Structures are given as C-alpha cells and as structure tokens.
Length: 214
Length: 214
DNA sequence: ACAAAAAATTTACTGTGTCCAGTTAATTCT
DNA sequence: AGAATTAACTGGACACAGTAAATTTTTTGT
Image (cartoon, rainbow over all chains, first blue to last red; front, side, top):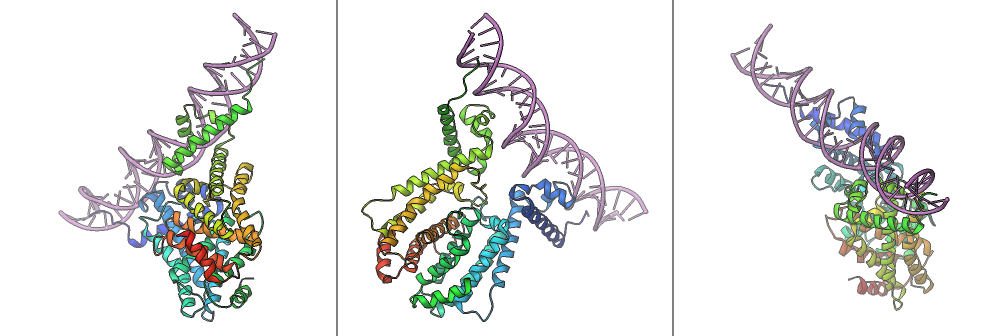
C-alpha cells in the first residue's frame, strides 16, 4: 500500500533523543532557552518534525518532566540500603532529595515549579510522580510498623515530603538568604518532624538523625 | 523651555494603575495572559507607553510581585489579634497563609513559583518579602520567649514557613490528589511542628492547636 | 506665535509556536 | 520493474510576543 508508519520503536527513539536534547538545552540555557526551534536546530531537523511525535509544545515538556521524575525516582531508590533503620532511611531519603534538587535545580524546577502546566492529561507525568513517591511512603510505613513513628503513614509521608519540598523550594527561589541556610535548616527540619511524629524519648531520635544528617 | 518632566506623583500613579491592571489580567487570564500589549490595550495606551515608566517587562512583573507581597503581608497582619496566645497566633498565621494562597492562587504563584526571576536587583520585592516575613518571626519569638517553643526563633520560623509553603505549594501544583487533602494535612503539620519544637506535654499543645485549626 | 523638549505613538525588527500546502521517500499492488 | 499510495518531512506563511528607532503629538517658556 503506502509507506509504513513509524514503528513504536522509532517513535520512542526519536522522543527519547528529543527529550535528551531538550534537557541539555534546559540545563544550558534555562527555561527560556528551550524553544522548539532551538531543539530542532540542535537535532538537525525542521522545527515541524517534532510535531509528528508530539502533539504540541506542552506535550514535549510533559515528556521532559516525566524523564526528570524518572531521574529523581532513581536518586531516591539509590539512597536506600537494606541495612538502614527506618529513621536512618528517612533521613537518607531527605538527604538524597535535597542533593538532587541542589545538583539538578533545573530538573527540580521543571518538576515542581508552580507555574508548570498541570499533569492532567499526561499519564506519564503522573506515573513519574508516583514512582518518585514510593520510596518515601515505604520508609514511613516501615517506621510506623517498627514503632519509630506514630500516625497514618500517608499523612506522615505527605508532611515530610511537603516540608522538605518547601525548604528546597525556598532555597532555590533564593529566599533563604537572610538568616540560616539550607544546610543548617534541613537537620532541624528532619528532627523536628520526627520528634513531632512519635512518642519516644526526644534525645534518642534526635541523636540518631543528627548523626546522619550532619 | 520645554515640556515639564513627569512628576514623581504622576509616575507613581501610572505605575500603580498599571500594576492594578496587570494583576487583574493575571487573575483573569493566568500567567500567559499577561502581555505588555494586553496591559496597554486594557489601559488605553500604546504598547510602548509603559516603557516610560518601567525599564522592561521584568520590571513590570517585579512591581506586580511587590504589590502581591504587600497584600500578602496585610493578610498576615490582619490575622493577628492582641488577645492570642503565642501558639494561637502561630496557628492563626498558618491559617491566614493557606487561606491567602487558596483564594489568590495567582498572586501566590507570582510570589513563590520557582520559575520566577529572582528578586535580585528589585529592592521593592525584597522589601515585600521582609514585610510578609515579620509577623511570623514575631510570633515565633513570642512563643520562644513565653516558653511555648524551644530553639532559635529564626530557625523555627524558617521551618514553619517552609513547611507550610511546601504544603500549599504541592496543593496548588495539584500534587495532593492522591490521599489526604490540604484541609486534613494542615492541622497535622502544625501540631507536628509544634510538638517537635517544644518540651511540653504533647496533649496540651496538640489540643490547643486542634481547637484552632479545625 | 513660536521653538524646544518631553511624552506618546507608529513603525519595524527579531523571535516565538503553529497551521498549511507542497515535497520527498518508502512501501505494496499490479 | 513500474505505478500508486501514503506517511514523513520541509519551507513558507501567520499571529503573537517584546522592544529599539523614528516620528508625531502635546505642553511649556519666551
């Protein structure tokens, strides 16, 4: 009949390459440096070619975001080792979270900036979010199961996530310049959250976390 | 000689009107709806006229941001009443914080979104940030002075701010759809933070805050 | 009334995302 | 092998953005 349609494999490969290029541009030139035309120039194709593989600009950015989430989830997974106690694991996840945000601020911005278009209609993005969320949830569940923390794991995990996110977020936005810095605040935040979420003697939990986060 | 230069008063009045118009557009059409041309159309002047009063687009947005901070600071101030205990005051500030963010999500985004250009070089924005920060810092200082909380007020205030900011931030980004909602998380967050920041019997502080935030 | 100077507008330029019409290239049927 | 079909791609427009330069309008002192 006619020309064969692109195979799933070809489509995926083009998409992957484009996401890679877009990410590089993002890191190099920041948010406003990533234009369809710049991507196309960098890929050696016409500005319209990407439209065969993505509906529009938003879908391209959704793919880049999904990829960023994947990298983030990997970093979270990598922070986990079998020998950690639940609290140690929580502290390690917090550390990894902050480290990722500091080392890849653009990726982090891409994932969490408020002016990002919502993930509705982009299941890959939602999927990435869930993937990145699992390690923390698992660690909190373990901590509750072991009696290190008390409360609903879903709620506790949300509190920790949002708190650390808020801290990182303000740091990246350059709003922590007056007064204490991120390095100083993170241990305080973690210990405060832990202390507020359990019944054990405060000095015990505090000592455990201080040993990890400093 | 020639024509008189614009008085300081005229300049300020034009700027104020423009910020007002821009804010309205922001609320109505969202981030991408606010263009210089739309502002000019709405103000009944040519697209170039604003350039007499602002250096460029960034400076316009800085003015809008400063104004948003002002409104935010006002909301914080309004949440304070003389008869509140330190802990009640903290809870009230947290409530007011969240309420403002929910009711004026665009203003909030404008202030805190990560992809916002930094406040460097825009002293009015920095000033607004400081203004919005003072009530919380004051309340924390009072709470430490009264013995309700323990620790460095600067650090404690930062922890509270960033935690609540993180929560609101994730909510506005639509990332709290799975599991617990903002209404449920906020009281938990506040009590957890308070409990983690003091030595008093947990049930006492918890009861006080639960009474306020629900 | 006139000249000069500042304000405001018009025009034009570059760069954006995207639509549309035309072109190229690959595959299959005869 | 050759023709027909059809998907992939290209290049050129368009509408919109921010803004620089030139131009016009308005206001004021003489």
